[in-house]
Length: 207
Image (cartoon, rainbow, N blue to C red; front, side, top):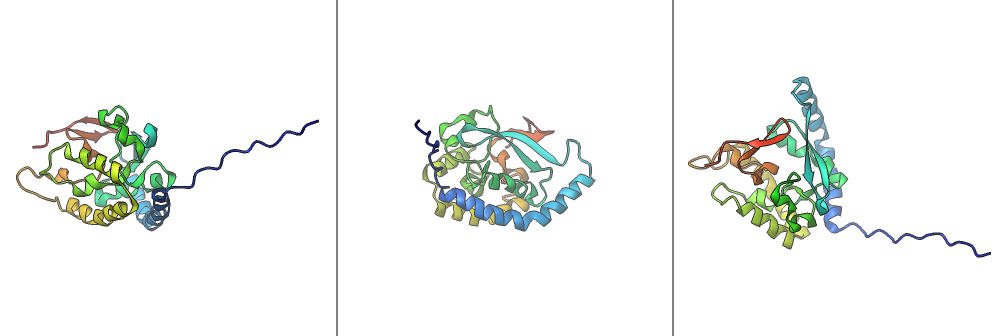
């Protein structure tokens, strides 16, 4: 009587260098930020905000897979950005990539967007200035997807703190340069909308 051979599954492909960077650096950043995030979470909880401590909004990830993006309900010191680090470790986000967009957004369906994970920061976010046309961030994101490599990721990560500092002091104030035009977040790519009670609604037009 012939014996059945055990079914052998093909080995899983090794993680890409980009994924290894996300796991290693993302875990380190999350460990360093954990005390600050815990304090901020407690402070937000004590204020009893309507809707809870976290904002949870569906977004489109790698291969068009939807996921629920959770952010701390605060923009102070960009803690909402740091609160997304668990998504990086989990694999929903990358440290560097195109800005995450919600399902149903026309730009979220672009084929090139589905080739990589959306990121906490990216080329469009760190290079974006109010003098650029609104479609320029989209072109920068597409350029990143088509040419990304570890060296470019490290350069963008190195430029992110300076971009955050510009955001914090209302970078580029003056004619046509408002305080809300320098944020490193998924709202950078959606002029004319804002997050209100977990929903994207029309906002004041940017001059």
